Length: 187
Image (cartoon, rainbow, N blue to C red; front, top):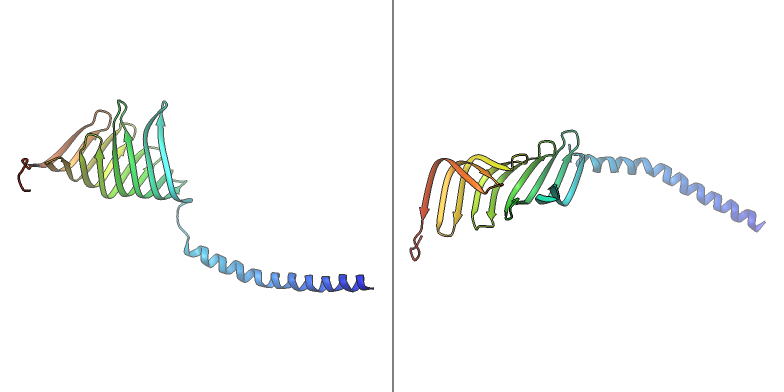
């Protein structure tokens, strides 16, 4: 008789637990949907912290670190925030670039860096501009924006730039001005 009462009591308690969960689950699901609605975005994948590299014939072409990456599968594009990219030259050397935002097209292999783009070559040149396009197939960079190049006591400014990462040659396109501060002079 004690066994029958124990089984009956367990069934009653189990029934209440099932009833409680069944009644509370729709509200929990609705709350979860409302929370998820606030996070809805157009990307397919959102990654916090990412290191991404491109290799060609066993040689690293570039590597990229980003605090946040949003990947859009349909467009085959990624949008990255707070980015550092290191471009490696075939004959050695590298150039580092930092930007607030980079859009990367996985099909064309183009990077578009925007918002406070700065960089440094291993030869000691620093540069700054507002946007920079990197064409992966040609290993070239271009911008139509104002560019500032600095090394030691030399500052060169111009509008627009074209450059090759393969041979480290860069050309400012217009309105070029240079300033050289002689050693010992006050800038």
